[in-house]
Length: 237
Image 1: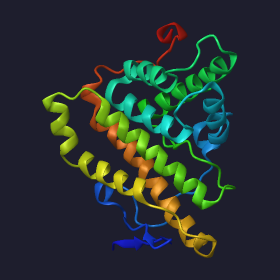
Image 2: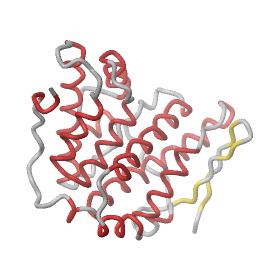
Image 3: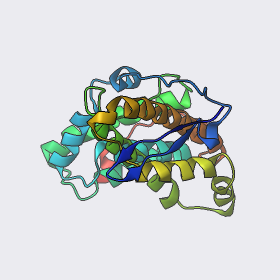
Image 4: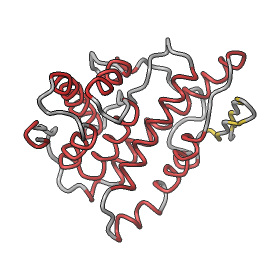
């Protein structure tokens, strides 16, 4: 049975059918997991740490956008996509700056972990989002930014006829539409926090599975399977 979550903020609605159309029948219709992303990612860095590092080194990307972009770049191009991702996120920053070097180390760690989780179909793959200690408003904004990055990675890649056809067909076309809807959504105020938190958890679970499904659907476009990418700084200089 389809359920509908609605979150109202300043006259705007955040509606979403659960499970979303793209993954109906693939993921359960019950409550989603509500897991801490540090455990899921297996990293010592978190969303706020990476966000601050990106700002300090002068990147125009935030943490959510950067991780979303990474996931779609890996899905489309594998190791080559990872190298282009790092160059894109750090574009315009000073290669000789210590702050840039520190940020690059965090990005490399994130890339390696994300690649491994997607390539090995690990169930603990998770989006890089703020902790549950943050308000649902903060987390919802970061989730929208993650979707922005993911979508940018899909649409900005060079598209041949075969790739365009794949993106236009199910389930990827539904995933793209759903992510566009999420980027337009907002969370409610404190009075609706509990309901919003449930809806947020469901959407995060959807995106988690959607990213993995996208990776599987685009396997033929990134060539033979390979090991985790080793991104050298020299590529960016």
